[in-house]
Image (cartoon, rainbow, N blue to C red; front, side):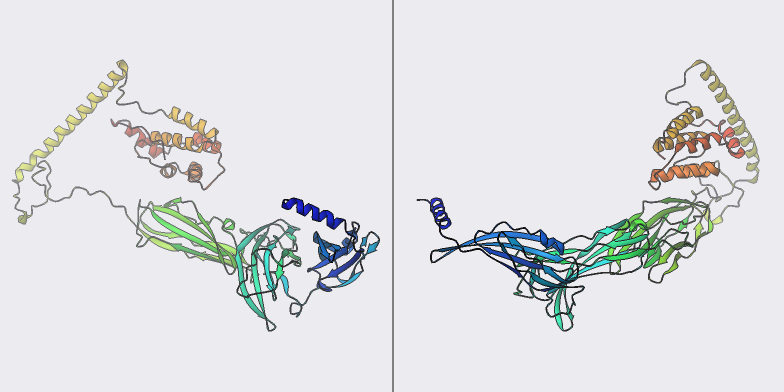
Length: 572
């Protein structure tokens, strides 16, 4: 006979035996609790008890958890069946509360009185654990950091399989972020050693009004402590289930002061620092990178603004994408924003980089502050020009170059007779006539070839301004930044054919005025420093542009020179 049949026969035998009369009892694990502390209630019924109605419990208590079990036992042929209902309850108000009798058919449980305190004293000898919450500020401003700290204190027993609910915010919109890892440590209070688990959150209110942090629920299992060194509250489930609930916290959130008109930065500390390359030298046309760093305690990097450097007009600047970083500190989050800018001087001499200022609100002192970088004077050297022919005596490799300077006797070069210099003017005149004749013949030949023969593919015709403007109009009206750049550079190379244009910064300098501002806006978009861009403004300024007279004169002289123009680059 297999085991399954044996078990079935035993169950039939047990069910056929006489049962003991029904009896009901109710037991609580303690009669004095705190308003936010759970306690355990157990009902036991012997025999065939009717299904009870537990709804009367909800008048004064919140049912956190419940379980049902059944045990059968045979003693001297007498069968007893025990039905067990376990409840985890939390009082909804303070005072002396009654656990009402519960009907089990014809039987009912006895009533039990529970004393619920407003706040259980943390130093009570009978208190084995409690949950504590606090904030680091009582009157925060909009966007100010609030450090919300939760601590679980355990005096006796070991906690396992624990969970803690996340903070819930009501009243105003707020950003909530978990901050750091949980900390485990020990603390002495009133001569008793407590084990502490600490967790922190950062809250940033986004509106004024009353911000309420709802109660947090802690749930776990507690059992007799075997070793103080084994304090892992996230271990396996064992012991008696326990629930704690923290108090709620309400804070008034204020608007910025009415006199404040700068970018709003409520922080504990803000600093500005700068750095340059080692042994940086400033020279016309050569870039040097300046890094400026903002550090703010109590703010996130996303809250830090773009700085206004007030660059002088004699500098071309090329900002890089800013670097943002958030790190932890004792004061919460520490934000860093690093702005690197390549600066290129265009004129030699002394240049003043203006003072940089950043206004912020000191939340500890409740007053405005100003972080500054002092003004800096830099010395710009002229650019290194290509080496020009020296006025020294001509070498034997250049017999046609002579000077009127007396020869160096140490060089061993003998001076020519004085009468030999009289024929130089005639040689210069002959060369000039020959050059003029060459130019005339070239112009005549160009006119003839242009009338009768197509231009050679090896020497393409000069680009047409109308075509470049048409390309620019199409790209600008479609808000196509890259296409506008290419067409704009093509137009600029035609308008200033005598100047080797390589980037939009050069073109802006040549154009000047409001068109220069539009070109720099386009440059900011291409560098990724600006998102919204509308090409119609650029097209309107290009159409209204008139070349200065001096540039027009240079262009007319350019037409007399037989130069070959290469195809413009597609990138600026």
